[in-house]
Image 1: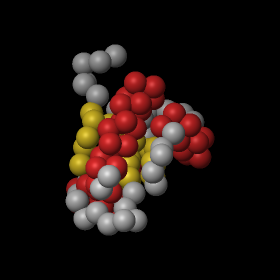
Image 2: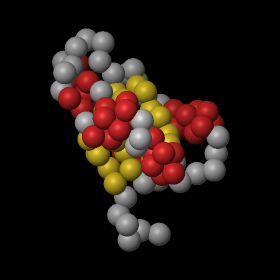
Image 3: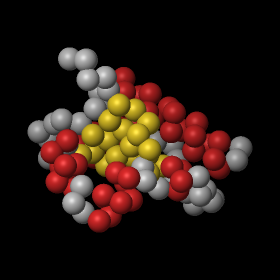
Image 4: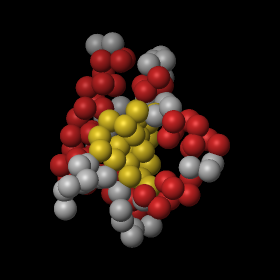
Length: 111
């Protein structure tokens, strides 16, 4: 199986699991898979936005336990407030929030 097919299949699985079991507000794909500049070392890079009071590292542990990735995957969980604060950061503002692809966004009407 080609690397891009492998990554896309795993991305679909991870997103489905996170939506069902983690209930994020938004999921953003960034990095090589988002830009389609895939090579043999490419992985899945995701920003998950969720309103939570858990400490940063607990969020990371929790999301990895839920997603159980089978390929190289970086999943970072931020709160909406943290994302707003990071919009001023050059890396996050340019690389992730502008170049990243929103692949899931919860409906505003959901409770």
